[in-house]
Image (cartoon, rainbow, N blue to C red; front, top):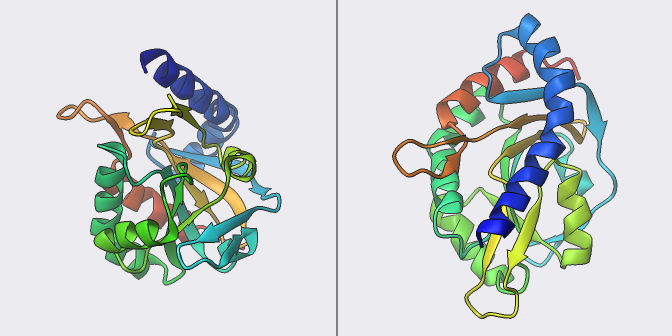
Length: 214
């Protein structure tokens, strides 16, 4: 588990480093974002994706258009990062909606084998009935999430109670359906797990939306 986790975190950091180097200094100098946010100087168009939501309906890149989408990758059997992050997002969700009525939270499951539509529906509803959940088979899912700067890896897939290592960042997609920014986690002093600070996310989201020209 330790080696797999290190690899996932290394790859996740690699996916973000280009955006960090090219975007953070450029954007922060002009827009006073916190260090938790990476904003890309040029938003990145999304390639087609074919996921399925918790109601069995197609969820494609088109579902991001006309919304500010905060996308978090995880799985319902996750013992720590996922429930904590989704609870934090649920806590600030009313404020996100006040800042933009186009705000939506999308939970993408990296565990399609166990995360059935009914399970996804019940899981996200526990945090907010307005949260969206989607997944796909691994061959479709992996390239879809990688273009968002997210990554995952299944540990001991042959076991029944396996774990899934995954990014703890939250990707932000703008109303044009482009990858606009990423909110990076820090290690929580109390729990020792990587978490996005929801209050910093709220501050940065406000500044990003306020400067959006579409």
